[in-house]
Length: 446
Image 1 (cartoon, rainbow, N blue to C red):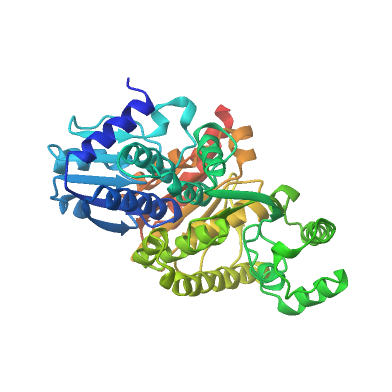
Image 2 (cartoon, rainbow, N blue to C red):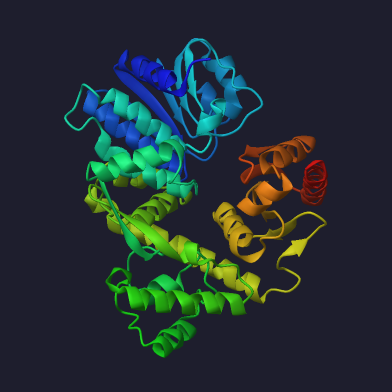
């Protein structure tokens, strides 16, 4: 089997044979930054292209692709049967990192999926796109596209993958050495006024979220001016604030580690939003509100779109804060549990996956968390679990959701630690029971 590097070069060669490309990518931070990298690389090649951001890749969307070159990012592996059926003779480049039972693809296609290469399984779609862009830019522009490394890092952060191992570490080191990114120690809440950051601190989750009076009283006790920016805190103030926030979390039985709260933060020297966390979160919010074009615009460094993206991000945070406050006070409508999973129904639309991640990482770390959203015609489902559960109990959410959804005429998949599904309405209890059963079997086998 060819190596990852060989497949990257092959993908670049296929792309350069064409003068036009159709780019299709996922709507989250990883998918949009991956598309942004590809768009910039194609522009610099002088290629024309059309980019579409979607929330899923289904039969209708694949059947409608009739271009001679199709590039699919952050999707495609799980839809290989449809790609074979409709695009079997088309040049298709797939840059994906989701697991699948098979990685077979048509001869005319190039599939770059790090799960095919055991040592590179934590590389995201934006990281793969960056590797391809580096090859595309090696001879065709002055920078060699290394200035796009910030987008790769943003995508990696969006999918919560480590930056200190494997190819991700190499990308980060290259970006720092080339002056694309700077790093320093600080509060891992983004850039802005301290008061606002704590008031909207959903990830990492701080139990003061949405409680303005309590935040003001908390900062007053510490003697820290909430109007100051987080980057202006000195080491003593930063440590004092961190200790106090950890104490608040402990009192509320919320799992919050010092590592999640304070550590290395990254500044982008070429992007329109310098703080890496803020950039990633705003791009992600754009996609989740169906404004993927604005997210792409941020990646293409359109400064005029920053305020609109910021507004979408704050709207998204308002939804999250509302839901977290509801869960905190809810009784029968709150978090429920079966033998092997916790589950809850979300009231707000468009936050299912993010909410599942917050609850799994900070509120219920003892069991996988399944969040169901009945706001659509079909029930949308997201499941998350902590890395500790993944390692200690052998849980594979992608397998569990795929099989449980398939039993009910739906579909599911993703990653062992984070997965999603869609099932016909009215099958929620049967689905939850199936997931609970499968997770139990996985734990027993471990």
